[in-house]
Image (cartoon, rainbow, N blue to C red; front, top):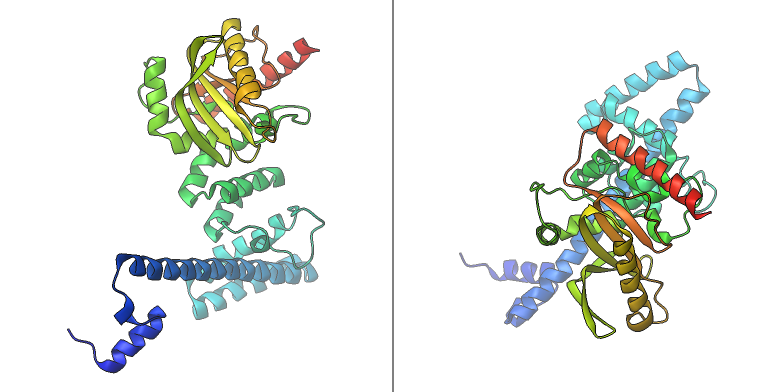
Amino acid sequence: MKLKGNEIDNTNNILGGNMKNVTTEKDVYTLVDKADILINESLLKINNELINLYWSIGKLVNDYRRENNSSYGDNVYVKFADKLSLKYGKGFSRRNINNMCLFHEIFSKLNPGSKINENWHPGANFKNICWTHIRELLKFKDIKVIEFYLNEVEKKQLSKRELIEFIKSKSFERTIANQKQGTSKNKIEKTLRDPIILNIHNKKRSEKELEKEILNNISSFKREIGSHVMFFESQYKLNINGLIHKVDLVFFDNDINSYILVDLKIKKVTNKDIYQMQMYVNHFNVYLKKDKISNTIGIILCETKDLRVLNNEDIYQIKYLSEIPKDKELLKIINDNKIILLKTEHLKM
């Protein structure tokens, strides 16, 4: 089909250039990249406007209900939802209007870094948060939990499905900083999970097979140990006093500006394992990391911890699970970790 002259001109205007000059793949890539940027910017703007709209509607309805007696206010709220849904569609159903009210009520308690302003809304602070994320988080009443998952979505750009998986695996409860009684000294404790869930099916394996399973699902593993983590190398060679040692997995975390060394153990951790990891960490700190980079973190990922083996400040024993267990079992493991942390801190005193 041939385009008429005026149709060609319109096409040229839409693409922002003369189609006669588009003769190479590079030109086409440039056009597509520009369009992609504009589309993403538009989608982001639409998303923020929707969040702002739902926030404002929730605020208006909540204010009205507070100003009137509860029964009358609720009755008006139902009629209000019915009229809106009739005019604008199911996006303004009673259930969704109720979600908007909860959204304003719960999220107005969040702390965006300063005192809550009357006109503050989450869209002004978060760029990767969608209404679908917010609806999932309305199930929680604890502000700390909501803030935790909001930051997870923002930093790790989680989809709704991934957020649900994070919630299902109790990421908040598994984060070491939330298991400790006092303030966490090491920044990695704010993102590092214990236990780490690997989501693998082959339970009987060697350390080599375990490493292969992790490498096959490296994106998921990175999310378990940090927010902005880059995979560096597997079986990284270190020449220590003329002997070649190999670190199973090496990562770099941009948030804490530190290397993370991971050693895999399918058996119970021993003092020898701690000593070996300390040797790796010391070598990295002295010979490999630059001055502006923070001290190296060592993780011994094991099937069974040993309380008698004390962790050093930058070395962690972390239990791994092949898959997400049932809620009761997972909560028991998390509670056991809390007890171990308390006992370990007591032994260090």
